[in-house]
Amino acid sequence: DYKESDFERFDVEKEINYANVLNRCLPDDIMVLGWAAAPDCAFKARFGTKSRTYRYFFVRRNLDIGKMEEAGKLLEGEHDFRNFCKIDVTNVKNFKRIINRVSIRPCIDDNISSSDQLL
Image (cartoon, rainbow, N blue to C red; front, side, top):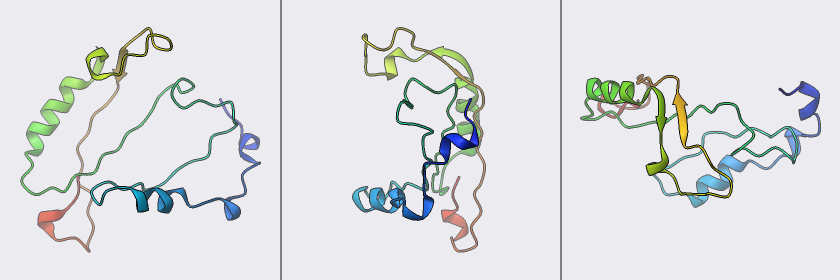
């Protein structure tokens, strides 16, 4: 667990806008929305976390939301994901992961036409 003082070395005013830098390099259909500072240089995102949250945004169009929710529920729980991983036998011995929740929600934006709303 981290304390607020672990982040004091970051001066937000002087920090590089990483989202803008990355978005200039990424294809148009991929976008970085934000970033967060790690508490110290020894922190390793791959091995030092207790959990992660992923958010994906899709243009709604003709997607079958019911089928997406149904498929997402099949991923919930503990599963062995070794067939989805680059095998790294030096660092990874356990390929089981727990997915606590999958949810599909509309992301309403008044500036986007109704057929192009995001999920």
